[in-house]
Length: 335
Image (cartoon, rainbow, N blue to C red; front, side, top):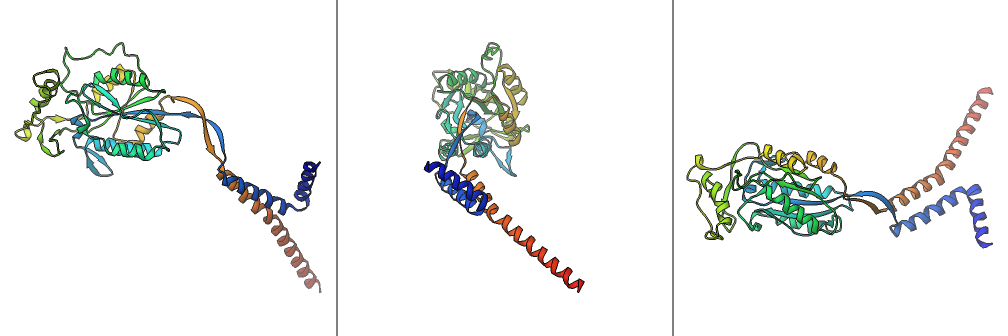
């Protein structure tokens, strides 16, 4: 009975004291907004495994971000910083690094908003000295990434950033057959300039000591890892002159071929909007319910109710005053 009486009282105020009823509703909505209510909303959940090539060729310059020249690796990190900052909450990200012929996950997919600072800090610390091998066997990476994906606790879409530089160079005996590859739905992002640039050779302090020559770039990365006699030895030989420097460029034709063999999409990484558009075309990891805060909606409704409580009355008073003045004006004119 008391509840029915409250309802009747509310309807009375709504019909006869609309301003009081609207103000009461606005107050209730503002109080509810303080508690930050959420509602479950169905949405596509995207989970990405970003794989970054950290081999030495990624230290090559020739990429530009807002007019500033930087290395391929610095460019990749800068673009990832920006792209991750625009991912909607609920998206999940895993960072992995590629060197030699294996891929290592720094962590499994984590939610971007809750772990934003940790993800950005990890990106800041990516560098070539994390590599465990001097080789760069991109074809071998496909199987390595596929094996890594199977260890993740949830599905994820691969976005692989690389310049396509195979070291040692491919020939009939070291080209892996990918005709039976089972993966699909990946994205390969080509990083690098189409114009040739020399690959810097660094020491353990990250200081440039010269540039890779055509001879040692072709031979040393392979020898360093396949020969037990030379395993772990460092070759500090550098190009003797500019003409001897190995010219490295984005091998786009090879990456397109590689992408086709592993059923992946290829996009050149010199345009961030193009990379984002390609990522959006990837199939979402799953469709699930995610919480959406509606405190802002309660606030907007409260503002609308407060305006509605007073605006009609003021308009009515204004119309009455204008009508009264019009009548007075006509009366004076008649006299």
